Length: 268
Image 1 (cartoon, rainbow, N blue to C red):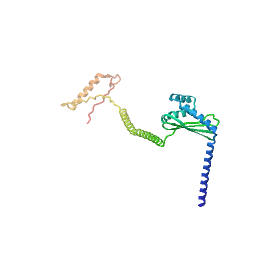
Image 2: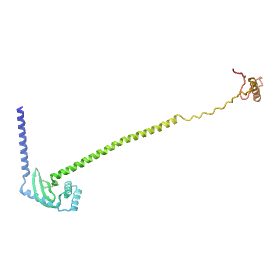
Image 3: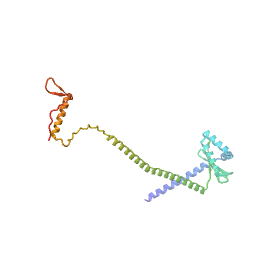
Image 4: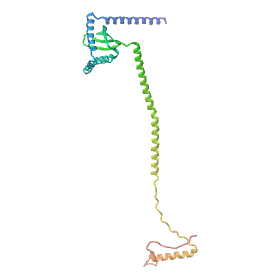
């Protein structure tokens, strides 16, 4: 167990020493700029900054549009950033200092300008062959209280937006219940309409033809059944006399209406 602790401590010491060596080496590399190169870079960056700072709002807008048309994204973003930061800077007063250092194959220049409200750091990075800028930005220096206040504002806006969206989503979800009830009512109405139409179709009005009225002979009071039979026989005889015709080959007679009267019997 003690050996493991010793090995862990030894590794920690080695890593810390390597970190310090890398930091010192990096610092040496970043400060290895000759006085002549530093002076030349200070003059170039200072002149460029003064040209931009001397422009009024209209000229600055023209420079931004020119960079946009030329598709120079680095200059367009830097000038747009400077335009947005001018209201927080106030009036320009002086250039305080210019720091020049070299990081690898790039010269890094930080120009510190003093304004009425706050300091501005103009950051520029150039290739070692002076072929052009690789980085360009205008960075206003804000105090800790201003940063905290801006962070608080962003937090309030973000949380307010999130809660507003959640409330809107909850309201949309609450409408689903009303929509469901409306769909149920519509389905019930449709079901009622379909039921009525099916009942009408399944039970059509049947018109039964009128049956011919059968004459009913009612017995008159005071007439006996024998007399009624005689009257009926006489009526049938008279009917046969009117519609019957003589058959030359037999004594039988046939009715032209096709009816044959065989006999009349009384049912008890």
